[in-house]
Amino acid sequence: MKDGIPLRVKVSASVSRGSIWHGAIPIAKLPRLAAVLTDSEGELRVELAAERTIAGAFRLHGSIAGELGLTCQTCMADFRWPLQIGLDLRLVFNEAEERRLLQECEPFLVEDDTLHLHDLVEEEALLAVPFAPRCETCAGV
Ligand SMILES: [Zn+2]
Image 1 (cartoon, rainbow, N blue to C red):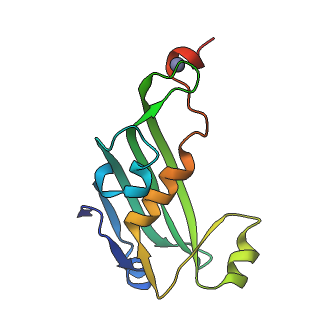
Image 2 (image 1 turned 135 degrees about the vertical axis):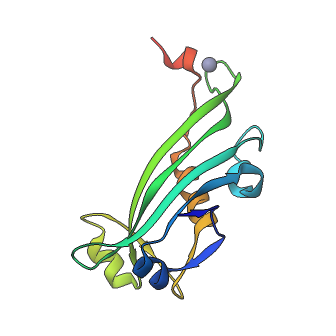
Image 3 (image 1 turned 45 degrees about the horizontal axis):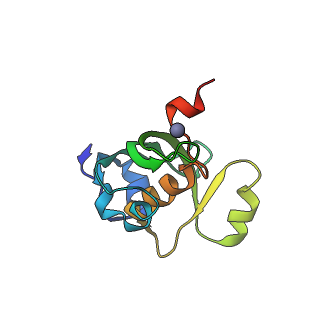
């Protein structure tokens, strides 16, 4: 278990070692995510693990959590939105493999045997941010 989330790792070495990472990434260090939030305070708590499945596929799984500053699209108040997502990706090395796996799981195309973990976490968090956020009060009945 390593402390901290490295910027980038080698896929083949991480998978054969069964690497596990956990740590926090300050939102201020994720500019594309910070750009869609009301502020860049706080951090994302991240747990990631690389492993080879029984079938021999390369798998990256884990979770991302944090409180993101969003503006409610109903009452226009700023609020903290709890992000909590799990991810389970199959690491693939070419587009043919990516297309083949698309039906059964979530493929993630790897280039040069390198995973940019911060970019990947930022991308997954961005995908999870609601398009029209609503605060707890407005989302309630
Ligand atoms: Zn609201």
